[in-house]
Length: 87
Image (cartoon, rainbow, N blue to C red; front, side, top):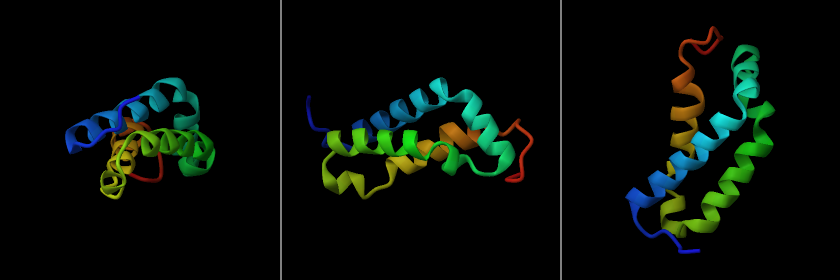
């Protein structure tokens, strides 16, 4: 496996991992948003994804928070139509 050294590739990997989380955990995401405890419900999956991301990306890019931004964009913002306390 190749180590990622560019910002563009790091963003792409982060979004791919977050997309997979969204795809395979739709019910948990909906439940977590409605109960306002998304990070608690998905903590294991999110941290597993973070471990994968960190294992593939150089440390300098890990500190840019691309993975966290992808989680917010794909697991939270994309679910804006769901009734929850966040909005």
